Image 1 (cartoon, rainbow, N blue to C red):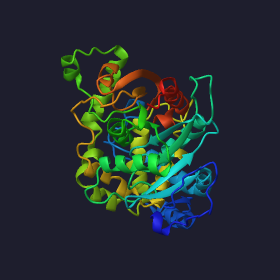
Image 2: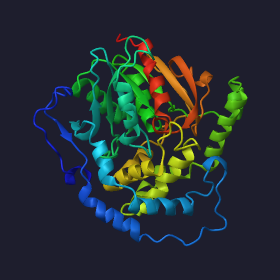
Image 3: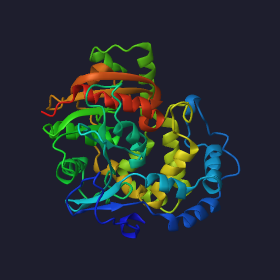
Amino acid sequence: MRTPALLIFVFGLLSKAINIGPPNVRPVKLDFTRHVPHMLELVKGTHLPSTELQAAKIGPDNTLLTGMPLSILRQLQNEWTTSFDWEKEQNSINKYHQFIANIDGQDVHFVHEKSGDPNAIPIILLHGWPGSFLEMLPLVDLLVRDNSAIASKHTSFNVVIPSLPGFALSSPAPDGWTTSDTVNIFNKLMTEVLGYKTYAVHGTDWGCVVGYDLYDRFNKTVRAIHLSFLPFTPLDTEQLAAANITLSPREVTQENRYLEWASTGNAYFSEQATKPNTIGLSLYDNPVGQLAWIAEKIISWSDPRQGTGPSLITHNEILRHVSLYYLSQSLISSVYIYYQNPNGFTTNYTKAKTDAPLLYSDFQYNVFFWPKALVETVGNLVDYSFQEFGGHFPSLDNPPALADDIRKIGKYWRTH
């Protein structure tokens, strides 16, 4: 489990379609099959309370006021051992070309899928927590294929999806590591390992922290960025008024959703930013505990219509994500991103030192909210789109809409 215990498939010559050059890159596939029986044994043997406490509460729109409900956790626990099939999920994941590159001593796990279009735009898709590279996989086929009906002359992408340090098969971040170091190795991944002279970025959650820093610091190579989250703390009502920003009724609802999260929904942030080892060790060999900790966020941060329409957020999807965390033993190392980056989301709004276009998608049920007037202050904003369906995980909540918004990069793409 983790990279040393993984069964790594070395194919010899890499596919001509995936030209990655340097010898420090090796193909990999997930192979956690032998660890699944132990995981399922623990899941089945976990005893939950017989009844919910009377004080436990669930609010409207799946707001889990007192945390993960016993009824949902018990249902997920049962499905994990009766209907969920990790082998099937693993085979599905392994259809994508995955690699590990050693960059500056760090193993970086990534997916690389290329379009057949010689004019395809290279793009790096950056996930957050409690996401993983799995979060971005629904975008691959949508972005790799050419769809000239949506954008301008450049309409397809060469897609790269790295796992952040400490996530999935990427090495844990060493002591003193910050997202600035991640930015350095991800730029090397794109330019030195994969050989792209210029590329675009999409990021959300912690992926937006890394992505925005790439956009700001590597402004000669990053020539466009699309975000659905910002690395800046949203303003409260008084701060918005002081900035002369007036909200529409719909935006007031979104702002109130953020204020509610800031008041009652960020306890996990404090725990992971101050005592990551405690939560990491508590849940280390406890798959149902990891399920409760992670599923609560996925459910409460997503569109309440999850699992309907374009949403891929079903119980099976939740179990797939939690299984990867457990089987890769990466929950403990993933939460250290909060501890090592206490100022990852800053109150100091600054404008990126670049003229490259910034595109932003505002999904109605995201837990954070930034009006257009705020987004304009941090970069060269050329497009601000509102999406009525979707929440904090848009690549799972509404992948077609997110892909369409990302594809707009083609309209503004310039390599210099």
